[in-house]
Length: 120
Image 1 (cartoon, rainbow, N blue to C red):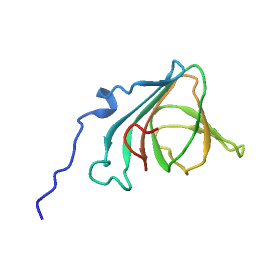
Image 2: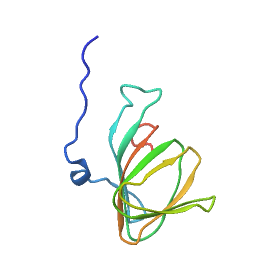
Image 3: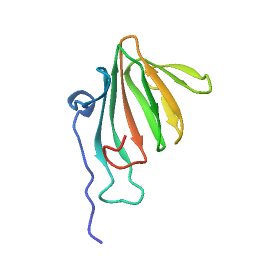
């Protein structure tokens, strides 16, 4: 079996600029995906940024883990659970969870979801 190389994106937290996905203040972009290597159960990972403005309401069609890197979010779900998310906080959003993201300033997070590239 031939050796397999890893992938690397230097300083992605500060250099990768995720594209606008909703409203005028929600940005998300996949940095890497395992879709080519594992098409049956791909994982995609990247950065999500929300700036002050409209809330983003998102219903997950896949499982996702998210770690807050910078800033702050208010994260709530349909059960009434609400968290003021800060750097270092880690979240698990199971498939079917409907989440509302808001911020008074901005928030930047890293995510890894069990989905194809750019399928968020």
